[in-house]
Image 1 (tube, one colour):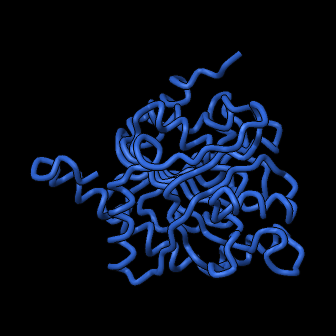
Image 2: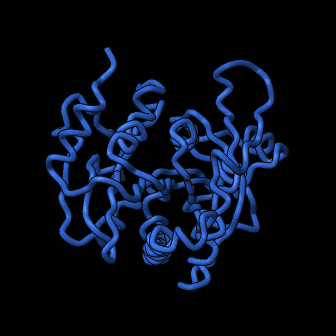
Length: 277
């Protein structure tokens, strides 16, 4: 039986003043961004009727609803993955909930492995396109999806402006989605690079796809927390992911904060520039 998303949305709305605005999904080790919100209301996933729980280290499993420099925001501190045993419907449940709550802009973040030696861990990367490398439906080569409706061109431009304003270096690249939970082999990474991939991870693409179905303009950003397998001679660990995410959290928070501020400014001057976002 599919959960009643309307009931979930009613529960969240009853607990908070959030009615419409921007939503942010935080990846592994990136939860400290939610601490920037003023007048926060914290709703553990377990308190929401029939809502699943995140089981991965670095994912607190709660919504934080509040304001960021006066702008309404709902933050998902923790997500769901296929490798936790969840199906596609469950993995994308947060997007359907956001839609019910009136979310009109979505920022998705993740921790990812860099597949490019010239882009070391510690960098932030705008996801300008994605590839589904799970081979769930067959052996056809993955396609690269860029632009509308998956990656809002105007939000990408806005993010670059935000990065310049707060002096945070920002890369761009193609994100490859794999199922996990095991890290990829060097041979797989070589294959993804040949396809044009720049970073690899175990989330985000289902959320991007679901947001596109609801016509929610979406921006996705990776924190490159490690090199992918075979790039350097070093084993991959989840501890390294969390350590690197913690090291770059100041830049991450500055960038996301400025993006949210610029999104809100775009809402206010919409009449003067219909295409800002």
